[in-house]
Image 1 (cartoon, rainbow, N blue to C red):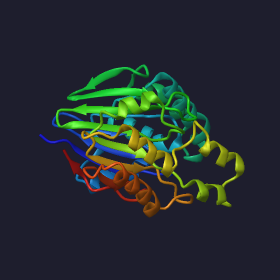
Image 2: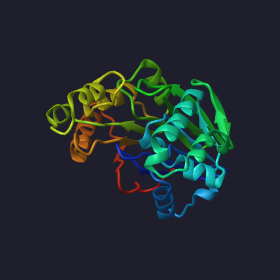
Image 3: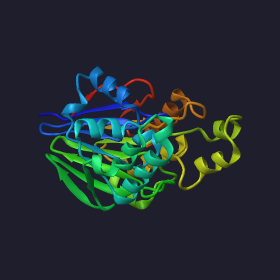
Image 4: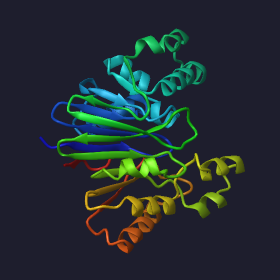
Length: 278
């Protein structure tokens, strides 16, 4: 059976991707509301009650917003490291219990309501017929990770929310046949944006912030091989980037290095990408 892959949405307001193999159906992050996750899965003919697992990269709200409502209701195992678990529990308990009218006792018992499957960053483990490799990424979260999902039909890499690409990150994503890579902002648009305070701009531009279009293109050049077939640009900023600009910068780089075999896609915030079959 082929592997099916869909980015259900990606951006500053939510991130979630779906991977399906013969024996496994996995979400990578759950950054939309439970209702949105259900609707986006339904748009590709899938439902949360059939999920095998949810993988979490880190605890920021655009990656965990729907986690409690999906994982608890449908008893889906959640895979993350301990620091991310602790930070996620703290976020639900202290930030969202009032904002979302979530009963305090529910937030207090969040840890026991979820089937947590904890891993150590850098470890590999199997979920049915997927081998999950984890690796550390430089971002301003407690212990953020990227993933490489190895399947019989190909490898899918996830490297978003990172301020720069370390040697470790490059080594791990080099094995991907499908790569989801952050291309968050255009530096000048970010610097000129009147709606972003200077401290926030510094955070985004920092070494534990987010990759710019140019930085993403440079990373792609460093890991390019004949094995990479599909490249998805993800986590684009609404205010400090334009899809056509991100696409142009990466397309120019791919042309420059002769990577004509790579199919370039852009992940959108509001609608799922077309499902890819490997």
